[in-house]
Amino acid sequence: MKEYYSISEVADLLSVSKETLRRWDRNGKLEAVREPMSNYRVYRKDQLRIFDSLDFMFNKEEPGNCVKPNKDYHAIELFAGAGGLALGLEKAGIKCLALNEIDHWACETLRHNRPNWNVIEDDVKNIEFKQYKGKIDIVTGGFPCQAFSYAGKKLGLSDARGTLFYEFARAVQETMPPICLGENVRGLLNHDNGRTIEGMISILDEIGYTVLPPRLLKAIFYKVPQKRERVLIVGIRKDIATNLFDFPKPYKKIYNLKDALKKGDLFDSDVPDSEGSKYPMSKKKVLELVPEGGYWRDLPLEIQKDFMGKSFYLGGGKTGMARRMSWEEPSLTLTCSPAQKQTERCHPDETRPFTVREYARIQTFPDDWKFEGSVSQQYKQIGNAVPVNMAKEIGYSIVAFLNRYYKHLK
Image (cartoon, rainbow, N blue to C red; front, side, top):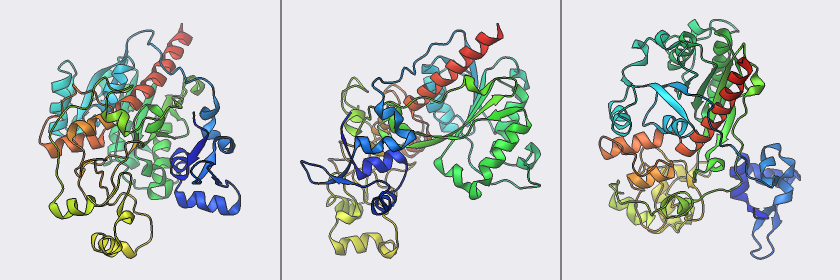
């Protein structure tokens, strides 16, 4: 592993802004140094030892996350989307007994790729889960972070009625598996000043689950060439020791965009051709002026003002606007629409958005995983997905937990 890290890399490693690092530099908490060859401001690897979350960088060996199931394990997945989480769990050895999704084209994607999966295309409110009690080992789901109605200090299941988390908790309550796992965007941690996630924990506690401290996982540490983050909420049934579960340990190697789109360790061929969106001519002319790895601040001043409009005079870096990706860095988080303003993800060499298959590669879907529906529907499915490789690492953690649990039952 290298000895020097740029300000951008350390910001990603620690999930803080570059401005936070500059403040730490000023107050002496973490002072940047000059890299001997380039004279750029960087951090030495040994300076990062003060952060517990970066312990993995100083271990000599990569973690051995891969573990095989001792028996068949089965899952129910809610809000399954295009199957990123389910596919990752499958790669770890967990079989999906049922998947629920309301979006028609996402269901068509699931059916096309896995005809043997039991895909339930319906509003989750209409589904009974009691029939699966005793037959499954885990309930998973990526529910939206809707605010709750607070009836008192301690939130109960009935207080969450009308939200999709209520349906997730209901599925857990009706099946009572050893473990449940909810995943969500980073924003859940601060949604409604933290009350939303507190409410979720309170509800799972009420129905019989001990919730581990929510964990923010960064996809770049799990063989995903993308700066994506997901919050995991893990509930362990109260008759089971919580120390049987470990979150996946991060890998030291970080993959970049070249690893995603070119033949290499992640994929055994270059990315196949496919359909994709195009920029309007006005935007294309602007983005043609942006260098690889650059963004709107790399444009001439007058073009900056014209392209950014009122945003030019507002605070914040707005680093996603007029952004061209770099071959040598992981992609920024993919969105549901690759050409929308404020979240441009321009190809490093060509002035265009990523194609559908490029999008899928960045999310670590295999090339033979076909997405159904229009091009915009396909982008939406891929942009909403859990990266497959990260889901596989989560799956290994679940398998290890279930192996330990069932061994203790003997």
